Image (cartoon, rainbow over all chains, first blue to last red; front, side, top):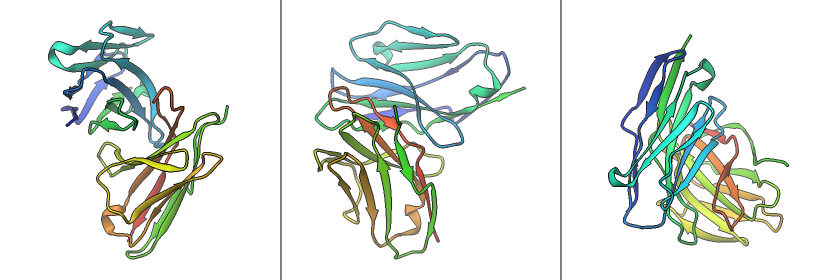
Length: 115
Length: 112
């Protein structure tokens, strides 16, 4: 069975601080995809990144960066120089290609960036 | 390019009633999935439709049912509503070849 754990329920930081959101996943499949989504108060899940299990290269996109480590089954997300607009709930998700594109989501981390 | 749109955005029902939620897929997407997100939780997979047929189902009872239409739009129907059905219902569409989901803003259902 697949599982995603986001142990941090809520994090508060002051603007311009760096913050890392943790994600640990479980799957026995060798091929899988990992995702991060942002959910602002409006409710829509905004896609941030997809990473497949064969690509362990870290990725940077502006102030966002992702650290994928298969050895520890982790896919952590770092926001550098956080801004108030980064305040949202962030979800990590896992998908195993099997004909059904079913995502397994973690319980989310609420990030509050204070001015 | 039009994104995923859902209606209604908010609705209130009472226990035992039935509800229908609607979703229009993003242009070019032929697969639709529905997720339930209870307060403070991550979204839970309900089911997925491809070519107008159910193509996978999560751990939800049969009173949760759906339809996909030839234009790839979709409906989620819930019968005999229970208090625990109160949640945000998210629709997501995807092109079958990628599996990447694009979500709508959801329909927030409150059951009293």
